[in-house]
Image 1 (cartoon, rainbow, N blue to C red):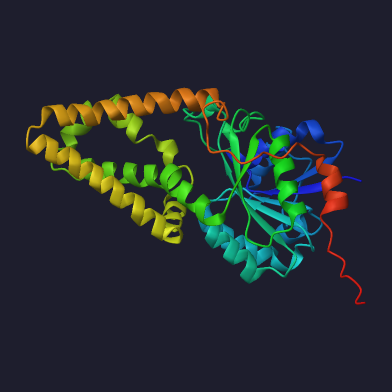
Image 2: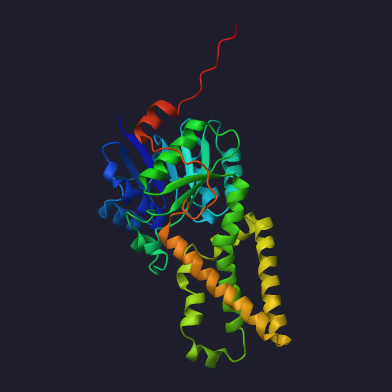
Length: 331
C-alpha cells in the first residue's frame, strides 16, 4: 500500500519536500498542486512529484498527508476550498509563521478528526545565504543538518504527532516539539521581525530627500540588510503574519525600538565605551550564532532539548497508526 502526500504550493519549500521524498517513492506517492501551472509542471520535470492535480479538492481527496507550503495569506482560502474533501484522520501540515491562527482556521473550517500540526523548518546552512527564490531554490537536501520544530494543538493524537516526526526525519531534519504559542513567539523573532526591520530600513532611507544621490553609493551594507529574498512570500503574506501574530510582534518590535533607542542615546551623549560595547556584542553574537548554526550540533552546545523520537517507518505509521479511535464498549 502506498501513502499519498499532497503538496500544495510548489515553491522552494514544497518542491524541496517532494525532492527529499524521492528516495521513498516505493512507499510514498507524491501529488502536487500549484496555482501556476508552469511551476507545477516544472516541479514534476524536476522529479519532485509523481502526479500533478490541477483540481485542488480532488488533489486532497485521498491524501494521508496534506502539506501546505503556502504564504500565510493563501492558507485560509485554501482550507475553505479543500475542507469537505479532506478525509478523516488526514494530517495537515504547514510552514506558516502564525500557528495559532492556522490551527484555529483548521478547527473552524474542517470537520472533526482532521489533525493539524505546524512545522517550522530550519534550512540547511548551505542555503541560508542563497538569494535564488521560488522553485529555482528547491533542493533535496534543503532541510538536512537543521531542526524542524513541530507544534501540535492540545489533544492531537500521538500517532499524528509521531507521523509528523517521522516525515521530518525522512526530510533529513531533526524534530523537536514546541506548543503553538511558543512556535509563534519563535517565528516572530526569527522570521517576521527581520522582514519588518528590513521594510522599515528601506522606507526610512528611500524616504530621505537625498535618496536620488544616496542610491548611487549604496553598497554591501544596504544590499545585505535589504536582500530581496527576505520578502520572498510577498507583502501580503508579511502583513498577515504580523497581524495574526500580533502580540508577539508588538513585543519584539518594542525590544527592537528599545535597542535602537539605546544606540541613539550612546551616540547623542558621545558614550564611546558604551557604544563600542553594544557594537562588539552584536558582532560577537552574530559570529557565535553562525558558528553554532553552521555546525547544527545543538545537543553538544546544550540547546534546550526535548527527547527526540526515534525514526519510525512512515508507511507503517500511516497505515496502522492514523485511524479513528475505536470506542470502548460499555460494561
